[in-house]
Image (cartoon, rainbow, N blue to C red; front, side, top):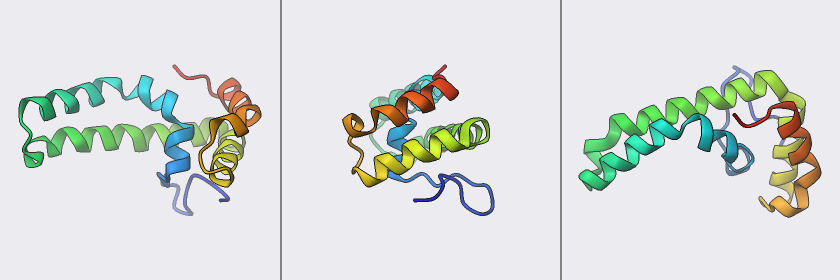
Length: 106
């Protein structure tokens, strides 16, 4: 896994990328996720919440692009470690610390 971004500059939302970015996603995209979950609770018909789901996706992809722009090296190292170790946080704490120091979750 070389990078969390493809050749055109778009994020590649693999499980390792999403897992490594989970703290950031939880903070930055909280409002979108809450609205989506409220919609799902109100109406279990998946079609009714497509717009809310698209907002969540837009937020996450924008966040991934921003993270890669601000701290590409640390993110790629953390994502690479997570990919290699099948998303086991405990085996990637050093890379996680470097990533969160370069791009603190906020």
